[in-house]
Each structure stands twice: as structure tokens, then as C-alpha cells.
Amino acid sequence: MMLFSGCSFTYGAELIDRDNERFSSHFHSHNIGECGLCNDAIVRNTISEIESNPGKYDTVVVQFTLHTRTEVPLQDGYLPITPQNLKLESRRVKRWKFAKAIYNNELWTMHIGKENMHKNIFFMQTFLRMKGLKYVFLSIDGHNPKHNHFTDSCWKNMIDSPIINIHDIIGFRCDHPQYYDGYGGHPNSLGHRVIANAIKERL
Image (cartoon, rainbow, N blue to C red):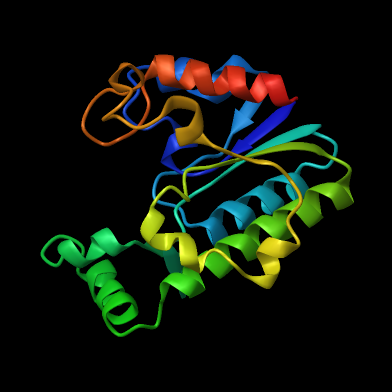
């Protein structure tokens, strides 16, 4: 069985029939994708699922998310934080307060975000190889030229696994609208089918 892990792209946000249309549905698989996760959470959830189910999975597909996402540990779990939370003062006060503290006071920087993303990819690569599992890495990060000079880190230099950027497969809404529906920027069922075919080519 295959394990699929990631954020809203893997979860299948905006799909009408999520269980049958998202790219993981084209495989014999279990999907643990969740909306709004940062890379730390994606890696933590993936490792936890594999460790809790020894021998269940032979292949793992991990979709890494934007480097701008982070999280705050609380007594009852982790609170996902994104730059968008800065706009949610009236609706999500706790997230807004944490986001304001993190992003406006430079507790987070572009370099920290990129380095943390690379560290998570390296940890995931090392863990899956240690377990002897076949894997495919996807990403939705890395296409903003403003961020190019933040890409170098010691962790990045130790990553030798291919990473498929989903936007290299289906483009963006502005240039490939046939792969998108709705207004949230997530792929439609056709886009998910194209992503599934790209995964199959790499297995």
C-alpha cells in the first residue's frame, strides 16, 4: 500500500468528490494530507503513521508545502501559522497574535523558512531510506524569483532525491486554467489526474 502525506493539495481541497478525485485515489493508498500544514507537521505526521503501522506501506509520496508556513507548540497540540493569519484578527485571534509576533517581529525570516524546509526534506529522505521504503517527493514551493537567493543551506546540499514541483506539472491557474476550479488555487480533478500520472512515471 502507498502512503500519501502533505497539505491541502494532497488532501484534495476544493474537489467535489475528494475520496475519488484526488491524486492518491489513483493508487491503492491511504491519504493523511491535511489543509494548512507546515513542513514540520507533514514530516512528523508521515513518520508517526509509518511507525504506528510497521509493514503496512511499501511506497510513500510526500508533498512538501510552502516554506513560509510554520507552527507553534501549545499544551494541546500544534497551532499552524501562515502569513495569511495576519489578516484574521477578528476571526482567529490566537493565530493572529502568534502570526503577528512571528512575522512582524522577525522571529521568522525567509532564510529560516527555506532552511527549515530543506532540513525537513533531508530528514524525510534519511528516514525513508533507513526504513527501506520507496518514495516520491512533491513540492508546491520554489517558483517565486524573489526567494531565489534564500535557497542555499547545508541541508539543501545533502538532499539528493528528486523533488517534483507540482506547478511544473500543471502550471498555475493563470496559464493553465483547465487544471483548476474554484478560487482557492487548488487543482481540479483533471489536475489531480495529471499529477497522478506524473507520480506513476516516477515509481
